[in-house]
Length: 454
Image (cartoon, rainbow, N blue to C red; front, side):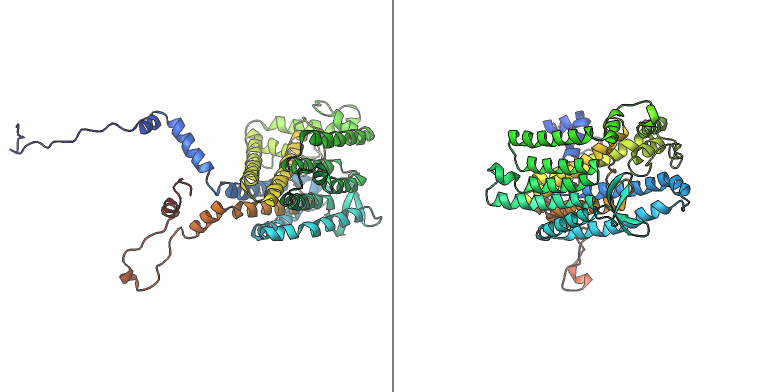
């Protein structure tokens, strides 16, 4: 046997075993490894919870910044302080945050108990709008109630929340009784009640809010499993009524004619649509800088409300607008995930209704700014100026948060996070207990679940 220079026999090393095929493949393909890690993180129980909470807060905060930037010139033109609209929006955001927190902490049975009172209150206020001396007309639409001073309320915004909660509770009760297999139980009284809300809204001339309510109705019917012929029938009736309402209104016909317009046209009928495109085009990739918009200096009407997305594109550029769209896409995905993973029919219908509401309103607003859809006069959810739109929307976001927290896997994960930094073990002094162990979520999750979710 050969010896080393020290006179000792050489150490016999074990042959190196080849790495498993899975590890070799991961090392050779980092893209696949990154995709696997991202998919595991995406499938964690708290993904929907954090997407809804974080996405909605980011949209609201960015909206406050853009409201302050876009509304300064309008406020000064009205001989008001430059921060006038921002202060009102900030107050609405604070109240809305309290509503969102309250809704997120409510149990599901309390949400269902609130469905009928909210519906009754919304119908009463929407009828009160048509009473002379109480209702107010803004931009040609009779859908506002003055609360004194500079504060107003738009009851039709609360009609969206009422339809979601009441419709979800109605369909859930009918599903528990196995009545949704009959078309009459699927349509009655959901469709007549929705048409009643639509009629009250259209009495004031608010076509945009009526479109959002129609989208919520179709979302609920689709989630309830309406057959194709029934779905197509209700959609056909809605399209015929919509065509009649548009054809009989010169204002709505002019808005429809401004789709894709690049010139203000006769009598500047497409002025707002064209200047919205100008604002987006002048923003470039990263924008002209926060507060440096040119179109908000009287050229772009409703710069801080319906067309705030155009000012965002001018000041923050393509990067800013894509960031806003990504936040709405994440919020929509999280809502769909909550609705798809629950076993509670009420949670499924309510989460689907809220997701349809926010997504459809965002698509209609952004589509109008981009010149792809007619200007419907609906604000960008959580982003545009308007307390009447912000309050019910933030309450609806609280619903989604409550539903995401109610998932059993999410409840277990949240309980683990509360003990992330460990707790002192009871009994004995610190010296008697021995070395301290940290109950991290990783350790507890590996012991509780073998799937690797945490």
